[in-house]
Image 1 (tube, helix red, strand yellow):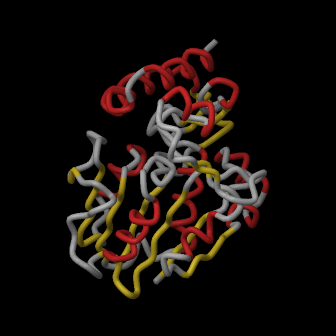
Image 2: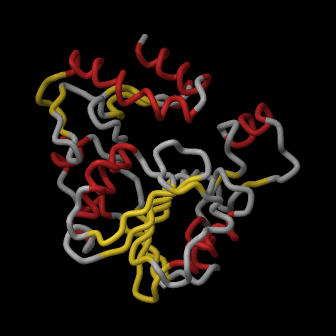
Length: 257
């Protein structure tokens, strides 16, 4: 029942409204999920399981942290940042495009970040309103860029990636994630598909404009990025994957100039 309700809300309630109210409502549900079977590494919340999350048949059990609203991919990224990067140690200027609420409070408080700029065209969580196709930042400015589950929404992903590349310092790195259908050898997009109903049928969501295939890293590399496909999750012990309910096959796409 809960999975059905959450699926209906995600499908029918505008995203901007959800972002404003979900962090007030879902923690109440979390009171009924308290336990010690799973732990969110971001907020350190302990639960018997996480909340279900997703749309329709793609809804997943044990996915959403009711406290900080982290999903499986967010928990994995947080562990990756902790174990494989300098994100929590070095003096850094960071651009976070379409910021996830589970990261905001933690990243804003990090004393080592010289700047932490959140930006998006629609999100009420972002401090800077911008179009990713034409970002209002100087060349070679940021040490780190996060851009997760954005490119499948934008009209011109090549232009968006070129802008990310432009604002990164020569020594910078970025994590750029998107949903990938591993059954597709190449990315599927059709600019003639414009209505929300047609887009949902073709791309899985009415606000998606493409489905990336196994060639995703090539889309990143053609801009000039050096792309590392890191199977970090597969190198973690099984008990860690289960403890944090991590996505077993997620690849981290680490991009450098």
